[in-house]
Length: 632
Ligand SMILES: [Zn+2]
Image 1 (cartoon, rainbow, N blue to C red):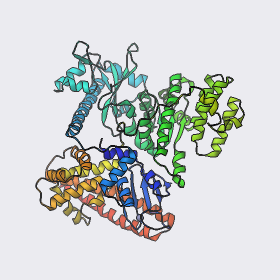
Image 2 (cartoon, rainbow, N blue to C red):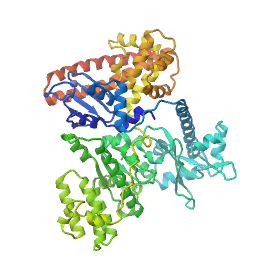
Image 3 (cartoon, rainbow, N blue to C red):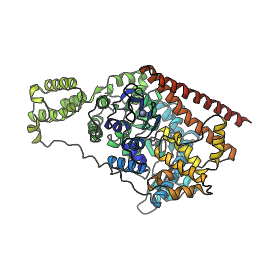
């Protein structure tokens, strides 16, 4: 992954703003406050969007950008300096892009294509073959899935054969090594290969951006083992950094401001089908810190709805340690005790546990009665209560050693809570349940003596921040900008024609102001520079002048799908992309401005809103014209 993306994933724009002394207030999906760059204490015209990691001042500055731009403006740095500053803060090592890395990237894309092919192959086996009928009947009748659900999740069937997959891909001119590399083959001890997944329901596992990474396979024959088998660790598949279903669930999670975690993929699918789409699964392992960090970008409210067995309960406790690690890290980021922001963020890290009744799994609950799911999730217990219940129920609380152990465990959780009233009431509850005097429970230090002598169960040390790259949820917004800029980078000759077209519609030419992200702005400037100098080979011109730090961004843009078609169609497509990009930003801005204007009665904001709305109209007219060109 590009270091720039990794830095973006590790540094929260909200933290940066808080450290700069900006007090932010949550207003829907975003936060508003007073702009730190111009003096004004009347109109809070500064808006932050945590999901895309961007900000904008709708007041005097009338500009915005990403975390880098924020630091550049705040500290008076250039992009390179801001990048270094934030890389250090995030614990990311900036490396020059080695040619091997570029090759790796292309290789990964090739392997992803192979996996997409495999999705189609297994799907065909499930839906169109005699051999797949049994699996299809199982999904429809035993798991109560519908055909549209099966299609939407791309489910398939791996044939009952040692070499069906192998032969299929050989026929498509893939090497055995390729098929092995994506985890679809196993190696025989005496050489040779065989299909890893046989006679199983195949569940494609995608990353949060919808890219293929591997498969989960569920048995159809109850005698087969293991019941669930995932792809082995490959360059694309790293279970600890994936959450099954997140590609489909990220929007619903954001909308509901809540993520529900279930154990298995089939639970995710069944619960989605029942209409609850904010559900993901760590695929049979305890939650990892990386997984929680991914979720944290979408919500701080997490409900663990795990299977009612002992393993499930244990998984909750293990997941809890990971969760606390993920949260503790946030404080280390220098979260400053200034005003509302800290308070709110703390409260948002809200972990609950939903207990499934009658020993039923989540998919059985929604099959019994979909509305019951909503009730169970609404009734989820705060984690402190749940842990206390579990610990007390399985041990003898009259044993003083057990008392001390439970107290230390639960007090740590209680101390995590920001609200002093809540802390008090949980301490009382703990004292009652352990039958001890509440005064002995005033904090972990007081029971410390007793606890220290015991082999306390300690959470695994967190990996150092730079140990491994995280999977980064790329904001849809950044994707949109990347698609557009990638297009311009490959076909810079279209740029003058695009600009002419925009101007004919009364719109401004493409400029850095169209891009929120600093790295993209820098690359656009280079492309424009090359055109001004009449350079024949823009890619070479841009590469030659590219700062090292931008080379990864550059090669990622070049890795975008190559636009195809006649020039006029390409120009239409590019125009459409630019208009779409502007439209998205402008309509968001208009909404935001109207909201701010209403709240603060600031007439200048209303005037800006009207101006923006006029541009929006011009854009819509241009879009209309564009669709007319197409029809001709
Ligand atoms: Zn400002």
